[in-house]
Length: 323
Image (tube, rainbow, N blue to C red; front, side):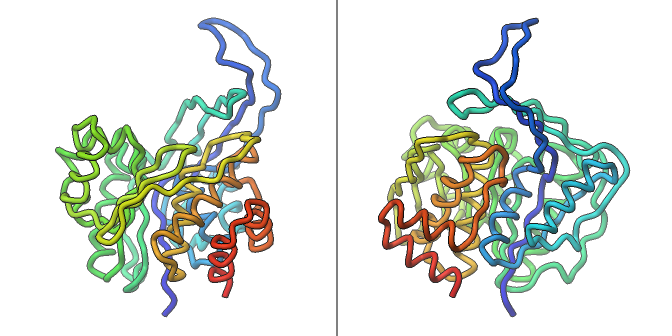
């Protein structure tokens, strides 16, 4: 049976505004563009992996309102299986995203109905041996979604699936006290530097990486922004540079696209190093459009990207993904 990527977490509506700079308190500025685009850390990851030809199932709650319907249809149109997505009463989760001229963003988040409604019983047919469950760290910001995340991890492990987690600041802040058992079960972990240091309670990247590996995590992928990432597992420990893009429009979703590309690559049989290269390419393409997964992504686009960077290694990776 073909392995699937099961993604749990947030799917929401982003309200993005392009600005020159943040206004002063009580001030008023004009935006160059304001758009509504479907997003969410988990949804972004799911969409990218689905576009790469992987079977992807999205687990989560969406509201029955108009925005929730748009978010659901966006997942479906991008090839994501929403059979395990439940529609509930309430308002759709929304993020106001202020993007300055450097592409950096400042966010105001409303978690929506998913933060206040329980997901309910999990279908035992969700997981098969060899699947990967990827959990967004934002799921640990409310009681109901945290309980669901923990139960999904338990059932995934029981079925022989691998566990992946992209932490948030709040998860990292409480991990050493509340979630050490989860860390020990992880196959893949995608922290940034500040999250890693919070979890390890160390300002030394070397010591923090050592702590994560000793906690039982099989593969640590330390994201360092536009520079690239450190890949550390039992056989490799190295920095892998990202692709440098001149025109960064919106960095929203870059880390999610990276995770989606990496996990899709692993399901397809790429080595961790090859999967990182694919993740970097996905992230570089996503930041050229407004929205966490608005930029188109397919075999032809990735192949042209590899040609533009004269990266034969990436070209071969892309061919493996579509073989």
